[in-house]
Image 1: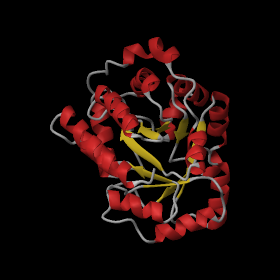
Image 2: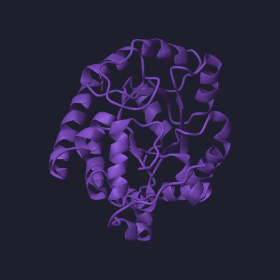
Image 3: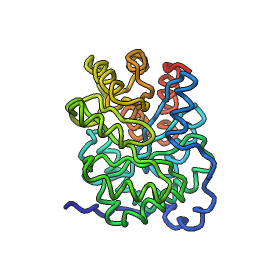
Amino acid sequence: MQVQRAAIGRPSAFAGRRMAVRATAVTTRPSVSGRMAELKAQKKIAFIPFLCAGDPDLETTAVALQKLDALGADVIELGVPYSDPLADGPVIHSAATRALQKGATLDAVVAMVAEVSPQLKAPLVLFTYFNPILRKGVDKFCQQIKEAGASGLLVPDIPLEETGTVRAACERAGLELVLLVTPTTPKQRMADIARASQGFVYLVSVTGVTGVQERVQARVEGLIDLLHSVTDKSIAVGFGVSRPEQARQIVEWGAEGVICGSALVRALGEAETPAEGLAAMEQLAKSLRDAIPQ
């Protein structure tokens, strides 16, 4: 089994503030499933942006989360940087590497979440691989991120049959565990995953890793229809969504949520300065938000 590699570089300023800020986390923020049900009842579509924590630094990530929230993000995904991100393409992999080099450890990320979460209206879903959870201890990890203000958890590298331990720990902590289906998932397995998924069902739009795509593959329409035939839970489509026209296409095909990750991560993390990155991310996020019916 792989182990999380140690972060390189100066520790984040958030690391030393972990215990002091936990108690300030908001407890009245809606659950992920609650927010998705509210949007569905209002015939609205969820805008779900993704960021990699710590790129370009954790202080900038905290500001970026608040900007996305102010722009009207309905749910926010936050990736914990990891040295071997099997589901992530080059953009997010590079962002995670930069974040680790700057000291974005798991504890530092949780401390940042605890500090910023009282200012967020959108429920926050942490995206992390299983090994950091295992190293921390499953129950301890779930309890800590819940106390910090997270509402959900997404772990891309554990199959359905092995989610029981994590799901039980999430339920004890009051978290929702979001599961993924892919273009190669058979119909019966789709139904099983959808039944077990909490919050929403994450439909991966491509076979492979995350990354910016020129267009959304036409087969996604059929995948959305197939999923709708086996579940009444909200379906959010991610992997490869980077432009407003792609978001509109996914909405026209019947998805209840649109997830954008790599393009926002690149806009924020690859700019010359954090200020320029925040401006670029905000501009892209606004264009995506405006493309989604409200």
